[in-house]
Length: 449
Image (cartoon, rainbow, N blue to C red; front, side):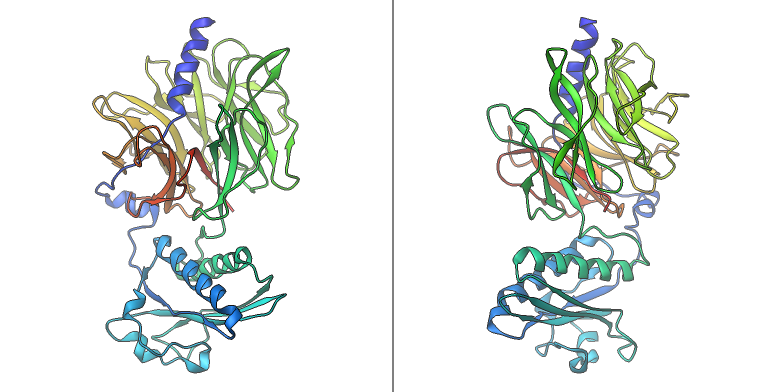
């Protein structure tokens, strides 16, 4: 029993770290699977016009957030504002399409609009036009009204960007309105769950346990976060599964079990939780309903099994990490625990943190090769082909996919030894972008909505 607990502790320690790196060459299967290999339309976003002096700040904010969202999307090419013609439309009647089609702008689409603001309300009119077919109806035409706050204007900008991305990608999901949960250390050994917008804005604390919280996982509909916490069980403070409701702002009751209980993950339909537990001695994977009742054992081995990831598309398989072969490696089994199989890699080393892409075809994970640090890789689950996303930039761990399948969030030590921060990148490893800058931040998880 002691040996099992030590083994679990070592494996758990390995899993709780960071990652980052540089893009690798992307094969056709990979660019097709992530949707990053398609031709990209060229889009210009003109400065949104303030209709009063009071609207200047929010007009600038709205414009910049929309541009940032589109630049990050991976589905289009954003024309640089330095290439724009001097006359900028603020309403459809002012659009002079040829000026935006010509070099150096060379736009296929143009977004523009205006803002009106009072002490009680901001009104934003926003359009996207196909400048190569300007006589047609706008591709997007929206009016947004709400409180004149930075937070509300940012929300409207995300919504407009999402509309554009949805139209230009044929209806694929966007990420501008999604959130990322993560763990932040607040000193004295305390770690709490925090949440931020996908671009790093609006960072705020959601739990106040004054203890240690780890491995947050959003429920499929985004109303709850399951995570690892430390709570008493029969007088002993041990790792347990906790659940937080975003709707009520409170913890949801979840039963306590003997031993160490860690790394929860949701079933695609949100009705079940799979997690690692040593309630019967050896750390194995168990599944229960979301209330924690009727836990059933799924894995059976002589080593520790943990970090499960349920295939979000099929619901038929679970990837996980186990050291049953001596070192932590990647395994795949049916959702009922049958037919476990090791996913062999071309070299030895330690493998941790599996995460499925939304299409259920690709597995991201962190792999420390024999003479290297932890880096992020992606595997095609069917062909076992592999692409390396990061290299030579610290430890890069805990990948989590965005719902569009085109972005990955992860933790990395690339900014310096001893500090972990949250980063995002396109799913081919390009456009790395730092989201957190202060303190110690780890274990990000991207919401699906």
